[in-house]
Image (cartoon, rainbow, N blue to C red; front, side, top):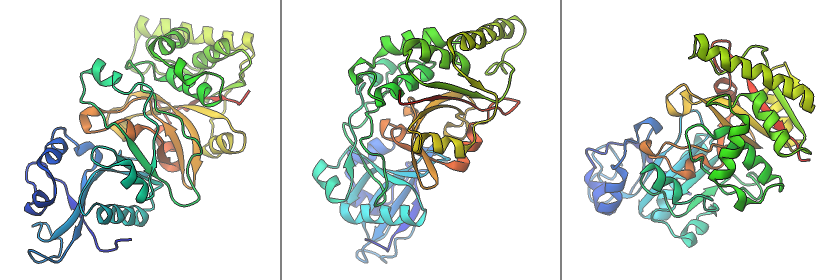
Length: 367
């Protein structure tokens, strides 16, 4: 594995000449087509000792390989957007960098790499999203890569990872995570996940427009009567209403009280304790449950909006989630949001919401 590499700042307005010598113009054009700054873009560079001083400095002399890498803040992965020049050397450098940073995994977008070359570097292919192509057409966004790859440390990873599904609206994240959980449990066929399915479940669970934890748990029980469902919410007060006041807040609070009555009638337990990260990891690992968890996007995306993610795997120091939304304007694709490892401390902080810092979660068992 390459041990000599340099990590340099990324500046799409001034490509170093050494990078221009080894990267195709169309690759550089794609790199600079979006503002990647929210996700800490970096160049991992391998010096070659030729044509210049060879020290891989900021002047860009003597590069044999380079990779553009990015990652969401508060997560435990790094993504190779492209590797250019001596591609195996560039990937080895990124792997060495990830190992030094103690990251949970490395991802690779399939813009320019073949499946054979990715496999030779130890990367496994990701299944294409169920909605591949649809989300870009509806959102007028650039198309994502037609393939993606992931490399876990030896002996770690997620067995039989699910395909990715992106929510088709800005408000159906709760419904999508529930559908993904049931599909992963083998209860729902993957081909049944579509816009009609997510909107139908959202309509049953919504507090307009958000899905609050108790209402979501009740909707899951109604949709799948034999499912083992448990809600954790460490407050008796209405949630997700901090930005509202007056009548707009009051009628949504009425609906949340009705959800608690529905939970009692349908036998969905609502635990008033805060679900700990230890309890969350145990639920996923030992009890084989899926956890729908409310988080704020402030850390990962820069705006404090409540959002549901599906927690479905654990690795040392991190929980693996599916995020049904990604920010294409910042250079994200489905490769970022799929199999997303979030360190325990980050997940603990981002899942405390609102002025009262409460945590909401819906646990769905294998039944």
